[in-house]
Every structure is written in structure tokens, then in C-alpha cells.
Image 1: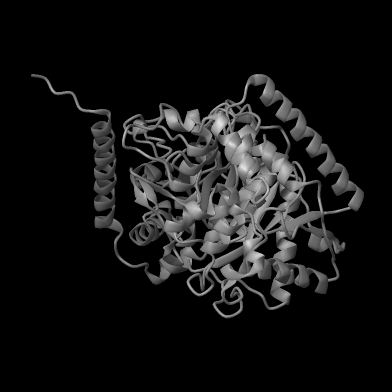
Image 2: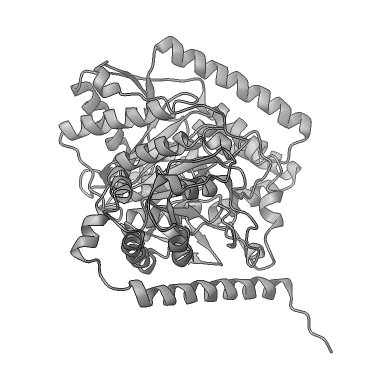
Length: 576
């Protein structure tokens, strides 16, 4: 009698094989890279991208030395946080030709010679980015053993630029989450406190960067997927606008969602490195690699040299969840530092944020969650936060209308979500796109009429929560970031401070207060996760936002913020 394995056992076997494959690579790498960094390697590790590239071109540093340094740090990061999905050390070394002359680099684009502007820069890839010969799992077991046949445009650009692509990083199953966990790779933990989430879905890359295992992480951002990990892990990150950064052939759990596509993003351990990386990628002409990129060259901006005083609009609340004390303190610190430098800082009340978010949620989950579900094998599950949305989407419409009717008076935010989250027809989706664009126009007019240079707000209303609290926080806690995906604005995150157990406490017995009782369900979920004592020492960031295709300006705005904070005596110290 023949025995055929069940779908559930196929899932478990795929997980076992992937974990076994990863462990074999880690074990082999440990034989070469398990020792501590030498003094010279410590010095190499401290070099910013600009100096690293310069020394490589001068033959002052060999590629093997760079790889050795970052391989050691990667293994340390993996042991501490479980952030690695695949090891590419051998291939990384082989991919760098002998000799460091820029003239060695023949571009794959057919456009002739490309300068190696990222020569020797260690870059890690989120496990959604295709690199030839390796899986892009997106955390699904069905993608195990299906290596990419060709590298994605961003990988080919990086290789032409001389970058050292040495590792891929963990993601949550199906991507949409506020934590990074999957049956394939287990749970990735926060480098500042292992009991807390690293964020998602670029969470593995954030943990790696925070531990010093890479210079740059190539991630994606469909609703805060790179900015949330930056906020949780004390990093610098920038989400570009549609068409500015290569994303073609980067895998997604929602392919074809043109109304809200996953956007290109990068994470770095310093603002200097983040800005240098973005500049050097754009100078490579990404539109020559990726047909989805617009041919906009790098446009240098230097707001500090100009000396012009800027106008900053602050969004203190999104109308759903006001920031918890630590996050509000970080935003207040930035506002005060900018005022001390003579900048104009004003409260900004944009067109109704919850209504725009409602449109965004409906567009994002217009398929009723079917694309996320269809890749799941029996016994495989997504994270609790994503599963909560899928379960809501799966309820019968008539039942959801009853729930909405009974809860509308006590919790109109929740009632509205229950009522609107369901599969959309093509006509319904097109109507939503029209509504979205009307809001975009209203935001544009409001921004222009108030003469703003930037908008400031929190990346999320809460610092990194505990792993078991991700369902309480829910995906809706990402609204401050998701907002700017719907608008397609350039948005960056930079760390400001850390949670302080004395300064950032909630009032005693807060959950018994009238303030808490009047909160909507989403807001209550966030605030029940907040504990300044348990979160003590976790990073807290702010978000700097510009308009469409203002990536260069946003990076410069982040520099202005960082400079103002430094003069005010507020300097964030990471751990890498």
C-alpha cells in the first residue's frame, strides 16, 4: 500500500529541510568566522560607506577582509536574534572580481560601463528579494526549494556597483505583521530586549543592521514594513515613492496590488550611510535595470548650507490612537530642538486621516485576504495580527453588519472596520481609487496652502511590544506609517531616544481611568501593551515626511532634525 504524505506533513517537511539547510550553512560559516573581531576589523567595521568605498578603490582594503568582518558580526547577530534566512558568504566573495578598478565592471544592462559606487559595501536582502539560485520564501513553506532563476533588478544593480551581498534575512509568514515569526525560521527577537518584537516585515534585516551585521538592508514597505522595524530597533530608514527605487521581481504576498504596491526601502545604522546609499543607487540609473523606475536623477539638496529656516507641520494624533508617552516625548523633543534652531514648527491638521485610512485598508485587502491565504498549507499559519484581519475578512457580510450595528455607538472606529473590510468588486475598487485620489488632492492643497516643508509625526504610537502582545496591538497600530503609503509620500524614520521607566510612565491605574474607557478598541489594544518599565531602554523614533519624489529632501530634513537634536544634547546611541 502506497502512503502519500498529507499537506500538513509536506509543510512540516519543508520547514525541516529549510531549517536543516540553514543550519548547515551556519555551521560551515562558524568554522571560519566564529572568532571575535580583531582590532583592525573593529576599525574596518566603523568605516562609513563613503570611506569604505574610497579605501576599496585605493586597494587599502581587500574584499575578503570586509566579508570576514561582517560575516563574524552576522553570525553574532544570528545567535542573538535569529535574523538570518540564508547565507551567501562564499558567493559574495566569488562575485567580486580580483582588482578593484571601476573599469572592470561590465553592466548587465547593455548600457556599457558602470562605476562601482558601492564597492565593498556589505548589503543584506530581505527574504522577498530574488537572487539567482536562492529561495525567496516570504515565510511560506510552499516557496522552499524554488530558487530564483534570475536575480532581481536591484540585485543586479548592486552587483554592478560592487556591493557585497552576503545574507538574506527573516520575514513573517505572508509579510503583514508587527512581528517577525514563521514556521520556517522561528521568531526573530529585538536586539535591545529579546522579549520584545523586532517589527515587521523587514524585521530580520532590522535586527541584523542593529547588531552590526550589514551596512544596508534592502527591504520593502507596503504599510510600514521597513519603517516599523527602524522605529523598534533604533535605525534609520527611508521609504521611497512609487517608481523611485527598484522593486520589480521582489516577491510579495499581494502581487498585482497596483493601488497600494510594496515600495522600495532601505535600512541603515546611520543617517550618513542611508543617504550615501540612496544617492549611489540612484546615480547607477535604476531605470536602466527596472522598467518600473522613473528616470529621475539624483538632485542634491543641502538645507543646512542654505541656512533657510524651514516650516515643519506636526501631526500629533491620527484620530485613532494617540501616541503613548515615550513616543510623544520623542516627537516633542524634535519639535523643541527645531524651534531652538529658529525653525517654524506648527500643528498640522490635515484632511480627515481615519477616512483616508479606511480607503487604504479596503484597497489593501480588496481581495478579501485570498492571496495571503492561498499560499498557506494546512497546519501553516500567519502571525496573530495578520490572522485577526483575515478572520474578520472571512466573516459573512450579514454577520459583520450586525456586529457593526451593535458596536457603532460604543466604538465607531471598530464598527467601521468591521463594516468595510470585505472583498471588493472591480467597480468598488475603482470607486475607492477615485476617493483616494480626491484625498491626495486635498492633502496636496492643504500642504501647499500652509507652506510646509515637512510633516513630522510618530512612526507608530508605541515602542516595540512583547511578542505575545502583537495581536492586541493589531495591524491597525501601523496607521501613522500606512497613511503615507496611501498618499505615496516619501517618508523616513530616525531614532531619537529610548524609553525611560520613570519619565514615560502612564498614570497609575490607567486602565481604570475615564480616558482609557473612552478609547476605541484599536487604541485600547495599543495602550494595554504599553509598559514603560518593561520597555525601558527600547528605541523610539520619529517620522519625517515629504511630498512625492522628495526622497533627497527628506534625507536632508532628517539631517536637519539630527543636527538640531545634537545641539540640544539629544543624541541616540545604538548598540552595533
